[in-house]
Length: 147
Image (tube, rainbow, N blue to C red; front, top):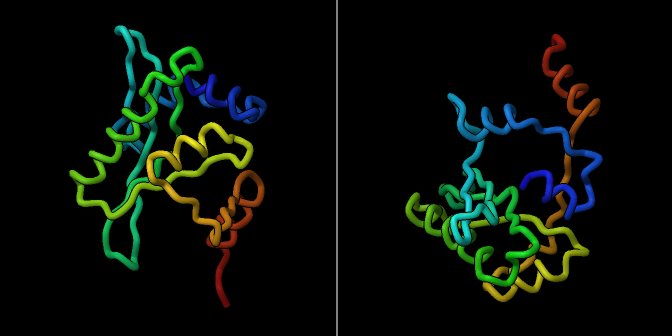
């Protein structure tokens, strides 16, 4: 499913996760995220990957949905909503104040789906990312002695 998601999002060229890496990240000694699988007729048909966040302004936790994916043939059967409802219930159970995720600006179907659930875009925020060499360079700066 993770490979299918990379294909759908047109970023397969960036996909490098192995089964072992995903297993360690999700089910290892110190999980980095949680995964929920959705089934239709005993067949895995979708997934949601999420992790806790924190708001200093609210002094409460939140949940970030890193990925939600439903196999193409099962879209429109309510599984995406069921997966998000599962994560929302997890958030409420853990007294989280909010549930957030990102969506590609070209994905009109997903945007319409999220709006139908009552979600609203945060247009005043821009996501920034450090990765690769830039991430390594900043991490190296931490190791340099200060004057």
